[in-house]
Amino acid sequence: MGKTLAEKILQAHTQEEITGPGQIVQVKVDKVLANDITAPLAIESFKKMGATRVFAKDRVILVCDHFTPNKDIKSAEQVKKVREFAAAQEILHYYEGGEAGVEHALLPELGLVGPGEIVVGADSHTCTYGGLGAFATGLGSTDIAYAMAFGETWFKVPETILVKVRGKLNPFVTAKDIILKLIGLIGVDGALYRVLEFQGEVIELLDIEGRLTIANMAIEAGGKAGLFAADEKTLAYTREKGREDKPLFPDKEARYEQVVEIDANGLQPVVACPHLPENVKEVEEVKGIKIDQVVIGSCTNGRISDLRQAAEVLRGKKVAKGVRLIILPATPNIFKQALKEGLLEIFLEAGAVVGPPTCGPCLGGHMGILAGGERCLATTNRNFKGRMGSLESEVYLSSAYVAAASALTGVITHPKDI
Image (tube, rainbow, N blue to C red; front, side, top):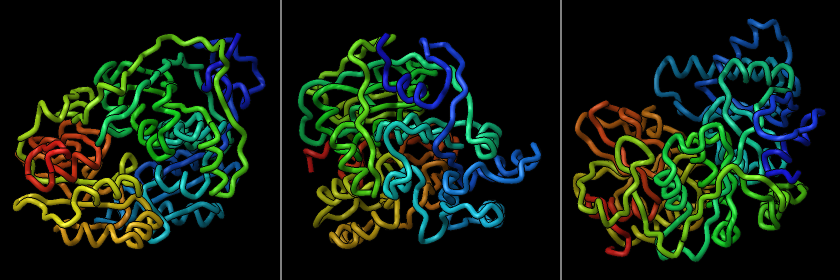
C-alpha cells in the first residue's frame, strides 16, 4: 500500500512496519526543541525522572524567544534556568540575546531542520518545519523531557487530509490567505490529530517562506502536522544552509482520508476575525473596521518576504494618527537583511516602532499588549480572546500586505486601495 508523506517519515524512524492510520509506533527523533516558557518545565521533569544527560547535545535545541529580552524578574529567572541547563549539558544549540530569534524562523534559517526528519518541540507551532518536509509537531513539556533524555517518543499514525491548491494567485494574495481560507473551510478542529498534506500547482510555485507560513498554521486547524513534499526548491533552500538532503514525495497510491480543493483563481485577501482563526472573511467584507494597533512579525509572518510586502505598501507614507504599528523581524539575520535593503528606514519614516526579534505581543507577552476595548490587526497565528492582552480586546489576523495597508488608514483596508 502506498504511503503518505507522514507515513513515509514515520516508517523511516521506526523498526515496526507501518500498516496504516491508528497504529501506535515508537520512533526515534532527530531534533528536540524547547523555549524559555516550556523548557523550564521540561528541565524539571527531566530531573525528576532521574535523567542526567541529554541523548545528544547537538540535537537538543533551546531558544529563548517568548519573553525576551527579559520583560520582568520572572522571565529573567526562566531564561537563567534554561541557560544553566544548557551550559551543564554542553548543549550546542542554545540561543538567546543577539543570537536568538523567533524559534520557528531561526531553526530553518540555521539549517537545523530539514526534509524527512522528525522534530518534536514544546511549542505548538513546531509544525512550521513541515514546510521543509519534516514531520514536526508540538508535545507537552513532560514528553519533551523524555525525548531529551532518550531521543525517542511515540505517535499514533495519523490520518492525512490532502489539500490541493490549484490555479493562480491574484495580486496581494499570499500563503497566509491560503491557510486562513483553509481554516475557514474546515474549522479549527477540522484536522484534529490529522496531517494536512499540501499539493497543487500553487503549492509548487510557492517559495519556502510561503510554505513555512502555511505549515505554521496547520495547528490552528487542529492538525498534528502540515507537510509539503521536499522538491528541488526545498533542496536548494537547505543546500544554502549547508545541508545535503534527499527529495521526499508521497507515493502515488497513498491513501487520504479526505481531499480538500481550493481554487486560487477566486481567492482574495482575507482576515480572520475575533475570536477564532476559522472566523474568516474577505477583506472587502470587513473593511472600515477601526483598529488601534498593527503587529507585523511572529513565526508566521516575520520573515524577509513579509517585511518586503509591508515596505512595498508603506514606502513614502505615514501610519494613521492614533495607530501603533509594531514591526518585529523574526531573526537577527532577517533584521540585518531588512536594514541592508533599506526596509527599516521605510518603516521608521512611516512612523512604525521596529523592535528586536521576539515573539513579544503574539502571545500577550510584551512589546504590544492591548488594553480593554482595543483592536489589533496582526500577522500572527492566533486571535483567541485575550491572546494579546485584555480579555476585552480583539485581534484580527491577516497577511503583511493587509496589515500594512490598514496601518496607513486606521481601519481594515484592502492593499489595492492604497
